[in-house]
Length: 193
Image 1 (spheres, rainbow, N blue to C red):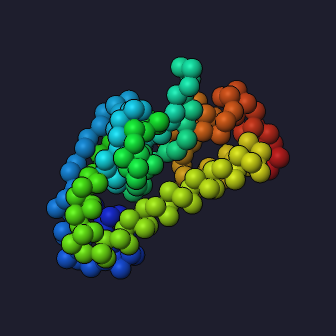
Image 2: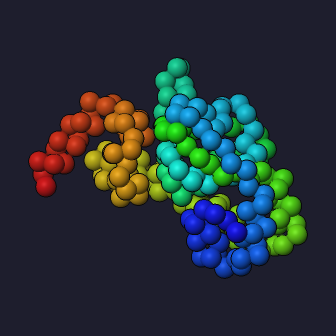
Image 3: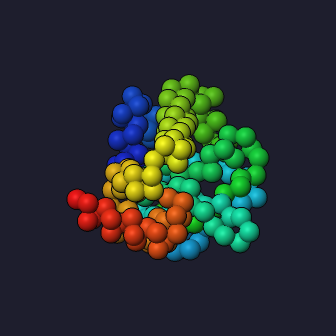
């Protein structure tokens, strides 16, 4: 059986049975990352979907030697350079461990073999695709319609405890502001409460 309860819970929520969970668990491999180690780098093809067992990671893109965070992954998150996973094309993002991490990975080939043997596993891939799509849509809408303060509030609601786990620098980058601007936003939010 899957030893990691969050994955087991996900399977139960999706209506997959214990035999399917057992079969899935046999396909996983454990990857341990040290802080600042990369799970994947820009230019590589992502051939995995991961389940964060412990730790914190960030996804970022680089331009002109500057980094821009576009996602975070905490315990129980699904992590992947998902566009690359779906297309088989090289990714334009990097996924880096912000802390020591443990990630359970399943390769594209093993996942496809599970689906070929039992289409019930499509429930899992549909869930992953829908989750990524919804997250990306919400982020895009937030940048188009919300102030930086509203984006910070939304980020804090989605990623509970993020400010204890991720540096202000990385949070500011995700919000599209400078770290000093984030400090002012937090101060104004605190004063206005």
